[in-house]
Image (spheres, rainbow, N blue to C red):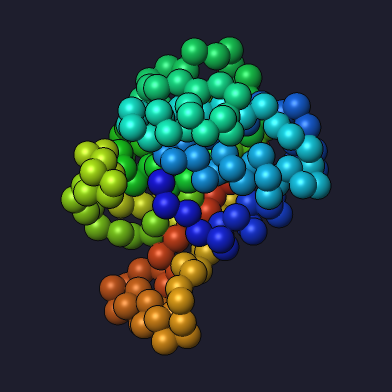
Amino acid sequence: MSHNPNFDRFIDQILPDSLAGVRVMDVGHGLGQTGYNFKSLYAIDRGYPVLYGIEKYSRYHAVCVNNGIYDVLKLQDAADPWDYPPGYFGVSIAQEVLEHNPKHKALKIIENMEYYTNGLIIVTTPIGVDPSPAGRHGNPLSEHKSIWYRRDFTDLGFNTNNVMVAHTSKAVNWFAKFYYRLKGRDISGKVIAWKWVKGGK
């Protein structure tokens, strides 16, 4: 859903050298910011991928159908089986998606990403953020339903990195660091996790 320019820069560093013709799946595409990055920011030096998207919220899906960024879009729950062969995608990415699902369902989304991807999978999520109510853009699915920590991903074989949340001032950044330390959480409040997989397993 929401995104962070620090994520964008880090993702740019871990993507394959070429995206030309690579099938990329944007899991929970939301309003399409990740798709926009793949067709602009990341494509500058790597070429244009074939961009797919899955989204459960019909209003976000309709926006992306109309904006023309994606090549193929499907309205569906990403935890359900995908209508593609095993290992079909070269990259699958889920930005700010997992926390909107109960843990068991989010793990199924990761399992699907691994099964349908022969290449790189990337996920980003807040760290240690308590469940919160819905309300963003009137989206009933925007509620946070699970809490994640870096070890959740390392236990699944992911590489991980904390990415500092971008704030508007040094004072706000200082307060954010203080707050997360006070709560006993990673000070960044965000994690990016990635690994290379062989689909179909």
